Each structure stands twice: as C-alpha cells, then as structure tokens.
Length: 183
Image (tube, rainbow, N blue to C red; front, side, top):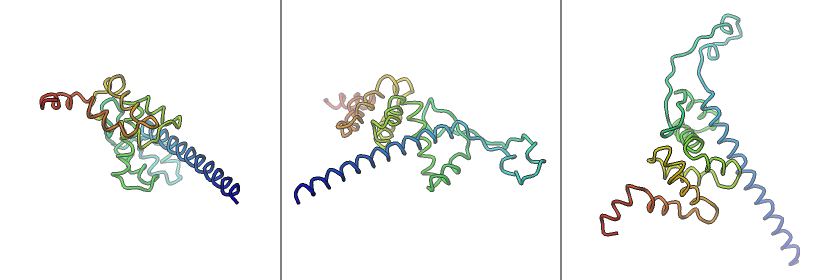
C-alpha cells in the first residue's frame, strides 16, 4: 500500500514537471511568435480586398497605417493594426494584446538576457515580464548592461521575491530619495 502511494506520488510529480516544461515551451513559442509577427506584420489593401480576382492580386497598394511603439525605448515600431490581430489570435481584448506585445518587445529588445532565459525555459515568462517592467524607466543601455542584469538575477529560481527589492535598492531615482530621508 505504502509503495503504491509512493509510486503514484512519483508518477504525479513527473507528470507535473512535464506539464510545467510544456507550458514554459508554449509560452516561449508564443513570445517568439509575437515578436516575429510584430516586426513582419503590415496591413495591405490587396490582402484585405482579395476576393479571388486577378484585379486585386496584382495590386500592390498599401493602406495608410501608422507605426506605433507599444514597447519602451529601443523597441521597433509596429503596425497600428497589430493589436487587433493579436487580440483575435489570443482571444483577448485589444488592450491586453497591446500589453502582451509591449511586454514581448521589451523583453526581446531591451532585455535580451531575460528573453533568452525565457526561450530556454530557465525563467517563467511572467517573472521576466515583471523584471522588465521594473526597469521600464531605464534607457536601453542601462536596461541591458546596468540595472537590467540585476532584474535578470532577481528572477532566477529561488530569487524571484527579490525583484521588487532590486528595483527599490538599485533604481537611481529611489536611491537619492532614500538617502535624502536619512538612509
């Protein structure tokens, strides 16, 4: 009886670990796909009006679309229509899609170490996004070389609870206020 319970427990643990690895891989695929789509997506009238006729297929007309920058400094501009496409694909609101796009672009272009950690399954996507959000006010060079690695270290397994502490202790604006208050 005891050995059967132990075997069931081991089997459940193995299934749970496999499920976590599968979820992380899925999140990494989604993250990469959103970044690729953000760079490649452009709306074009021929795609929208293609009713199967040669008239529309031969046209190379572009819709007047704006490039918007949902991510921080250093991230590429994306089509203003991208959020609608991503919202439909992810079955979420347009606002949630914009936040997802911004988070993905910030990770890839402002925090490449965190991006790679998510892709490799070393860090949960939500933790990496949290660390990137903590560094949102930093310029791209600070985010990548200075304070960004502190945030990256903060989300390593076992250290995620320090993410808020790293931001509080090491953010230039916060340091000055704390020292001015007698700290």
